[in-house]
Image 1 (cartoon, rainbow, N blue to C red):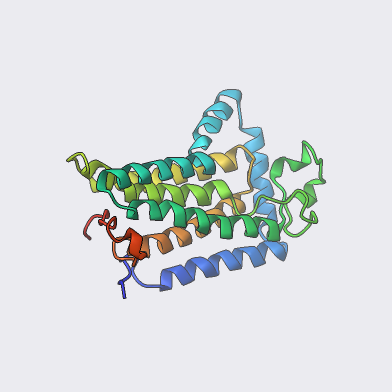
Image 2: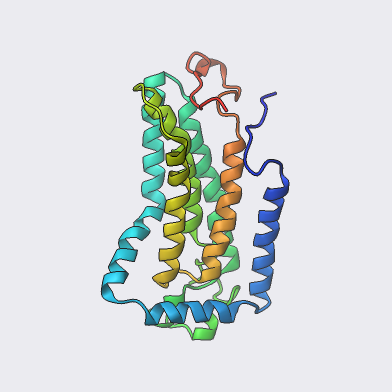
Length: 244
């Protein structure tokens, strides 16, 4: 049986901590806690958003667009696969796509929370309603957790997995620090900008961070080079991940 790849911090305790933090945050919000903090952060952002800062934040926020990131990761996986004549590099984008769609969307629908801007543009909800969970009958509530943040963590994690393999096919290597930057910097930018722009409450972004880290750890545990493949694909199963 293939052995799981190591992650940091090692062990499942950190995954349990992330899951418990996400559940605890959701329960706290559903019980009416932290809503004042969300409202205060959103009000501060609204009063400190000049035009120049708005456009800079809006451009940077594109780093968290799920569909372009999905296509980019899939494209890199296909290129690496063609160069290596292996189907294995295509597996991480496929699994990441399934994992994000089975978690982020259903959570958004079930928690049913509106965005901060829902009180100043359609559907013009009362301010008290926009910040609460479980309140819009599933019509307007798609804010919690932040899909931008969760997607950024997952997809830049997949790109960080594929990028070294891509460069190795042309005889180059990627400095480990650059891989870390790819994994860390874009999600932090997306978390900051999506909250600053008023597209998500602060706790939406925190929830997206917790969920994204949990999914990222699951994906990086998968032994992509050792997964058993069906018979017809066994002649295209060359490994692609770096030895760790």
